[in-house]
Amino acid sequence: MNPFIKTCVCMILLITNVSLGEDEKSSALKFGDYLHYEGDYYRAITEYKRLIFLDHANENRSAIRQRIAMSYFRGHKYEPAKQIFREISLEAKNRSLIKKSMTMLAACYYETGDYEMTVSTLENIAPDDKDALSLKIGWCHLVNGNPKEAIDTLSKVHDTSKQKTESVILIQKAEHYDELPEKSPATAGTLSAFLPGAGQAYNGKYRDALTSFILNGLFLWGTIEAFENDENVAGAFGAIISSGWYAGNVYNAASGSHKRNRDVRKQFLYRVKVTCGVSIADEEDMSFVPILGVKAGF
Image (cartoon, rainbow, N blue to C red; front, side, top):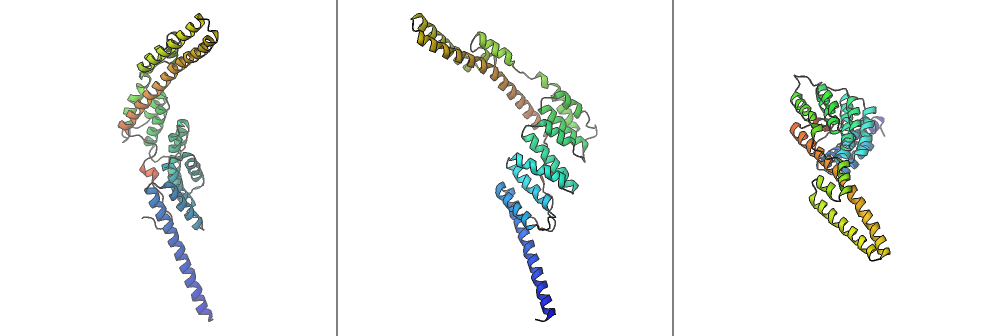
């Protein structure tokens, strides 16, 4: 074959192969994004992993993995999301991608209830808006039951900041955090120890109080009756059952106070969050970074 013709054929095959490869990448990205926005996160992850396989140059690895991590996050699989966001924040060179990954890592910690790690992660972010970051950190302190730290942090928001209104509201709420109408577990347990059901009544659970009082009274009455009729075996069995119900009554009263207090704090924080609209990660933080050389959209 003529060397010139041979060279032309090789060039055409090479260009065609590259074009097909790029089309396959674009197809995987578009379909992955489509599945992600449709809420089919785990199939989206499969498409994004296929895109990593096709990205032989490895130039888009971090950007593609951000999509995988976001799919895990939106699918409420926070542990694998945390791992990937942490790795991206260490390996990526794009400043915007590093910031997004650090913010989303903090959001993962927040969703799993690890507020101390949320604060620690947020504090390591180089922010474009320090006031917005202070608002997030102050909110985390409040959620974690540290109103004083929340007030100290929120006080750093500048008067001219667009977050000033929210910070003032949060400070006002934090000042009243310790005044929430909570019940003492020790008091509830002690009351039920003296009179079964009294602790439940103290917690506002009047039906539980009546049930506890009647059941403990019946078991005690049955035990006494058995011993008075010289039915010692039945009396001993009744005493064991009565002791168990009595101890359970005390435990139930104390744990009921803990649960009530958690519910009071949860409702309080929910109302504050609705009023201020605080979130660890906003839509900008959750947005995808572009994949170089690959057409997105669907």
